[in-house]
Length: 288
Image: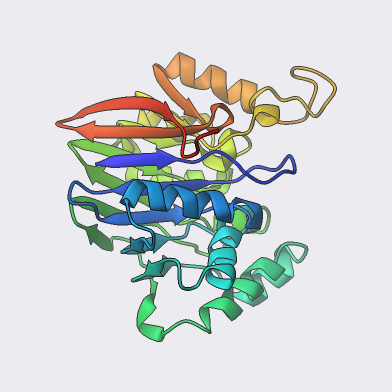
């Protein structure tokens, strides 16, 4: 099994999250994808990983309906409809009225995504539920958490679907942008059974789930979909001069014992998982 964590390719200083998964027989899955400006790089990566000019994605998994997670998918569907194919889109979004009520400034993304999904064949769409298992060759995804529409703050992030991936003798937990409230619910449901070899750091590594969730996961490897300014808490005024909590979360992970890190600020990464071992490599999908 191979996991690819992609760097941000949008010119503006904004975060994103994009993962490609490849099974041993070449099966492909994607999680989220990033912003509108990340679409071309995602297609380039999919072509390189698959070795095909028109790659086929067996499963495209969405965590939640924020633009830095779903807009690259919409971009590719709009701009490159004949250059790739998707067998099934997996998702579980909260209701539009819930988002309109409690996060109206961001609710437009779900409306746009719903409109896009309405143009897709119904058999391409699948709303997931807790406990559901999704098999893509040797890649085995399990849905651990879906939205419950209880939080009244940070509602879209707390509506993130949480997936556990198993393959190559390794377990990886993907938290999306899950916030403190969602993290507490996840921990109450699963406790120490959350333990995994690697974890995708919630909400780009800051202001996501609280420390007890990471203590239960006890990862060896941390996947950070985190640009340099967020990694250093630098809004442009210097190291650790911003409002973000990334440095605090980085300290948590050192204290918990995470030993290896893949950070998107450093570029694209490939993690090769085989017989319980993980090799981490920084790679490039371009000649430049």
